[in-house]
Length: 387
Image (tube, rainbow, N blue to C red; front, side, top):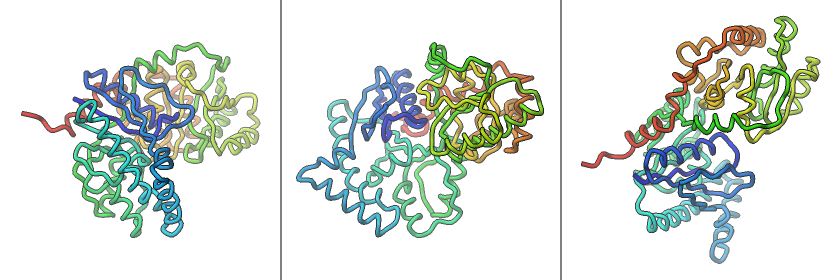
């Protein structure tokens, strides 16, 4: 089979990392795999080996197009976006869809026709929304929450998703999309639940890299410093466990973001500057995961929660607070007891409980995320059998 995975860019991010893993997984399963990224960006992730790589540079080409037509179109799109709220992708997508089609045709002339083309992330969908092809599959990684859509929102949803092949990465994302589908009267060709893959061998390899890390035993949290990640809850739970439950470990929070000052103030209010550490954004977080006593996730919303899977691949136990999304998909069976209510005292006790009774075998929980399992599901559900 000839498969293409399409993503907006290869910048550092969970969705981009999964796109690379998926493309590599198709190659490892014996398929001809291509990875297409639509925009260049700084600080890009490492390219996968043995996967054909193509940079379309849609936004850059839009600016450089013949006689400046693309640049003029971009300006017109920006003006229309002021008149009609959140409509920029509609107008710019009309132009970039044509660019994408032309570049895809060039690749197919050289390599042959693709059997399957997988697009990841809504930002990617928006750039090529005007194209329809039975080989296209849109992978939805986000939770959609609006109970009622207005006219424009319904129109935008139909432009993106109507009569498409859709994949949702978790049960929460699947049901969220179904509710939006019902509210907007969307009709899709197929809607399938297929989770994200993880390269377990590569994760273990990266976790064994020797890097400078925290010397004292520690509990770990990681992610964007954003309100949705709810790091203040973890800090407050840690403070309670430290003060009342004799927790002997430090707390390390990996990440950066707009809520850093809020996090720092929460740490200061708890007088825990000596025990809570913020090393910033770490390109390779896996050695930190491997050497942590426990990984704790306190997000209010998680499309899936791949960081939990990555932690288990590093053989580190996990705790998470209840949230809407895919955490329950990851933490099944015995691991479901590692989920607790998003309350600082309850979380503190759950942290101590898991530390005292750690889980040591994660193979059962990692199996559904193997590249082999995920690629076979895509082929089974979206490539017609040829007789």
